[in-house]
Amino acid sequence: MTKQQIAKMIDHTLLSAVATKDQIKKLCEEAKRYQFASVCINPVNVKQATELLSGTGVSVCTVIGFPLGASASEDKAAQTEHAVVNGADEVDMVIDIGAAKEHRYEDVENDIRVVVESARETGKTVGKPVVVKVILETCYLTDEEIAEVCLCAKAAGADFVKTSTGFGTPKAADGTSLPNGATVHHVALMRKTVGSGMGVKASGGIHTADQAAELVKAGATRLGASSGVAIVEGWKEEA
Image 1 (cartoon, rainbow, N blue to C red):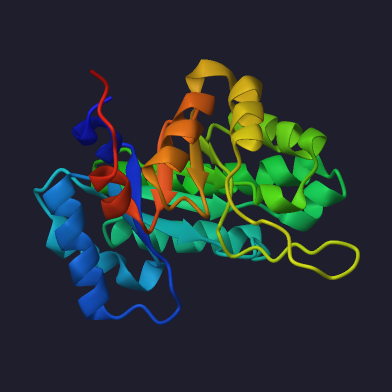
Image 2 (image 1 turned 180 degrees about the vertical axis):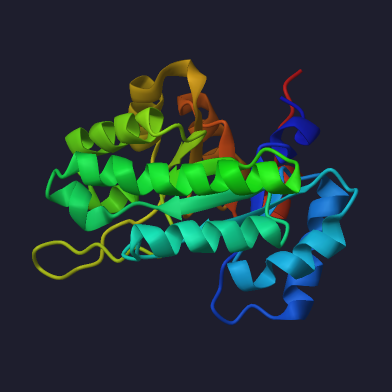
């Protein structure tokens, strides 16, 4: 895989609460230079990014119900509509994690479907397809729960399942912090569950080309990372 090919798999990400207009501009400039798949930004920055990336071939991705997933489904739908009208090409929505932990999978599926339908309908009004990715926040879920939520996302018509927000705060019984990002194990499980017809996005804690390569090998077709430049620059092209 070439550097250009791995770049086209990266959502160049800046989701900090203190991200400034200048930082968003820099993110977009890097995305144009490296031809990343998209920039992934908070909804408040969608309009700026859309203007900066118009005609470049780089998509604008934003997040919905982020980072907790605890918004009402109707609020997630409204946020999706607003984002698409403002220029978003892709939306990454966080599931109702509490519902998943209680195994209320019908509620999980319905929550996802509401966002998918909002994206599709609003996309029609603005004349473009909108990609929907479903963030599981795998650090809180068991393997069984991960598989079930993947099936919910597939049934609801989403395009991708995604590992993490990068903002999760899981803790062990003794209170010590646990990893909160993408793992090879979870990506492989998600790929096995959804099959070849859906995308799998790995995100959270991906800082190096070696990490990226392992996740792609496990089945990831998209990578969410704030270290996109470092990943591409460190990428070892196949002979």
